[in-house]
Image 1: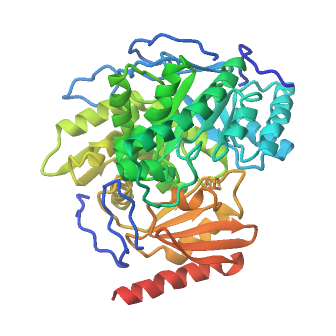
Image 2: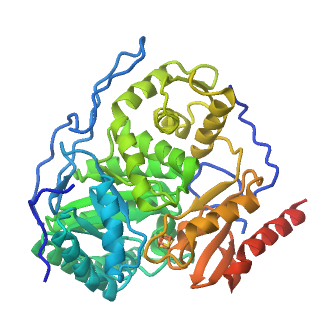
Image 3: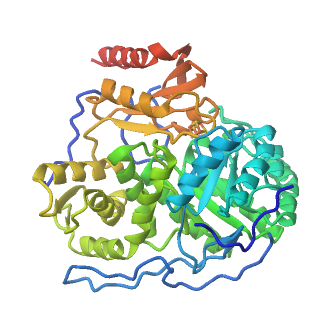
Length: 530
Ligand code: SF4
């Protein structure tokens, strides 16, 4: 059996807020979290005090004037030890990514994990859909360690607690999803429970989860309780509705078991493709944890953020809003690109926390007539986009303003206007282009995601206000694109299913026809609306 490393070093224009959609969306673009539809190492760490994280620069702004720079205060947390890498407390904010290779393909996973690590990834996650993949993790771990790569690996498990039990023996951390760990996969059915029946469901979860925690304790394996807005269980949805409160409770149910079991090697995440839902839910989770004296570190990410500039800006708005509030101990920027390209983006976000915290305070102090004004003299276009989105995103998420003016003499008026529009769309204030909710891909992906995204974008680019989900697999795709008006989902190799909202309207159609069929579906619906 492969042994886990524990201490080896790691190789390591003023804009109109009006929407004038040229194509009508079957659903409204609201900020509300409701789903839119057209249709242990039990190491008991103490809470570490607020401090400047070692990789977080202190607030240094190139700008003069009020408000005075304020110290960057990071939320105090316990520390989760993941192999040789500690998350939370005073430790640097960790950067991570996830492989897109088949987890049965040892060599493919090793090579991709190495590319992520060599770009600066500090944790590498692998999809672990079954026992066979879980067993193969030991080969991937062994090969990476033989080559001198000691970076901790994380198994990503859905739907099958037995798989989590196996994976916990081989890798340094296992992510489970409360939405499908014991509860069955989401079907959008409303379930009625008496209080007694609901408590019985919670006991079922505890009876299955506690043996898993014992395995993790025995093997010094950390866990991530990873809630996704798109995969909340029917049980939670029926009890709490599609609300931030439901998202948080889904997490707290599992955390209370960890507390009772005195299992502290835990990281938490709540992700959504809607930045407003993501930010509000994480803030609410922090409050809920504080009220129950829990201080677990947080993993931040915006799911299905897409690719290119829009994917980067959307991630910077959501992740940046929280980082500039001192929340977040590890981040993943999920892009529908090769995973190593996520790392430099995440690194820039972490390195910009100090400056963006200051810029955010300054922009908020100078709010005028529903307009945020941001002056930022950053010459590098991508860094500028990320900093701008990170600095002002929260102001729009919180609806403190609806217009954005950006100045930077290095770029044209058109570029600055386009950036402002992208930030406002990422914060769900104003929609000026088609929104693509595309998954980053993983070992379950059933088609060439990057090529398909390009083809769908080309076919639908003028459809302002429409949200199109592009998801690699049928297992998680339909749930996790819950916010989309239409969905393109991998059903099997060479087969695609098309969705209108949550409804599958065309099943298992040949992949070569699927983009055209999607376009036809949208245009026919538009005709009916007019
Ligand atoms: S939707 Fe499917 S293919 Fe895409 S990242 Fe999620 S699990 Fe992987």
